[in-house]
Image 1: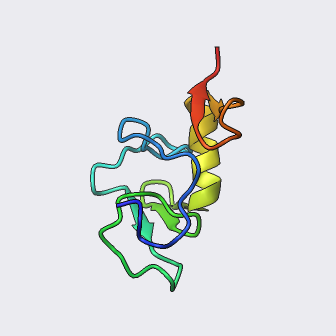
Image 2: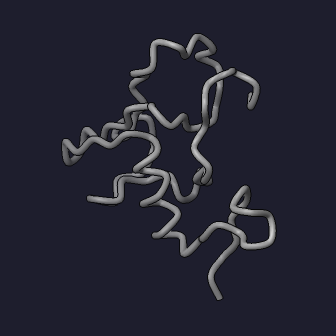
Length: 94
């Protein structure tokens, strides 16, 4: 649901990419979870990563803000902002 009214991260990791960048634990419902830190978020059904979401890995006890984690995951996936659409989309580095 992209119309929740709160800013989403530019890069949205795929389910396959959604794993801890520190220890590699995947989101199987046990290790990674999103902790809503932004009081403006009222649509808890939004599946997109928000800039101010807190993301916690219970396997290695690391935590990130959504915007930072999004950038880390984009780099791991070898994705970069598209030069043709002024950074609104991402493409794989060749």
